[in-house]
Image (tube, rainbow, N blue to C red; front, side, top):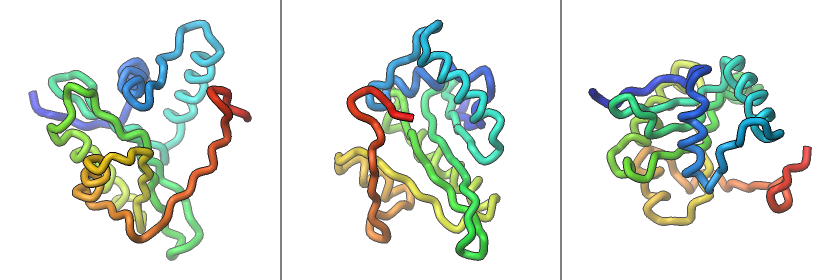
Amino acid sequence: MAFTIRGAGSGDLPALLALYSHLHGNPIPEPGTELHARTLRVWRQIMADPRHSILLGFDDGRAVSTCVAAIVPNLTHGARPYMLIENVVTLPDCRGRGYATLLLQHAQRLAREAGCYKIMLLTGSKQDSTLRFYERAGFNRADKTGFIMWLEQGNSIYF
């Protein structure tokens, strides 16, 4: 079976959370906890939002790679939207096979179909290999400067 890509569906949450556990050590929420309940609420919101895509890549039916591709409406650039890509992750034993590149190419097609004028992507990685990966995928780090303001202290998120 070949590598396939599709948008995440309502039954894909367990596979997605397993992938996310390899992204900065995100824990899989335990059923019955407040975090699990919040995760389910957010999952339903994401599934209901046509501008929010979670792409999943499958190798032989196994979810091995993912990224979020969110289309943001915009009043500049001829009122054309832009895409924000986040949470790019591939299972450690599947890295280096081109799966994330294929996901990013798929996201680019979605952005073009939606009339987006640009795609933005941030990475927290400082590893040169990761930065070169994104450059090979067509992104550059010269045009803009990214800033982040973290709204959390330790592991507690303030709402």
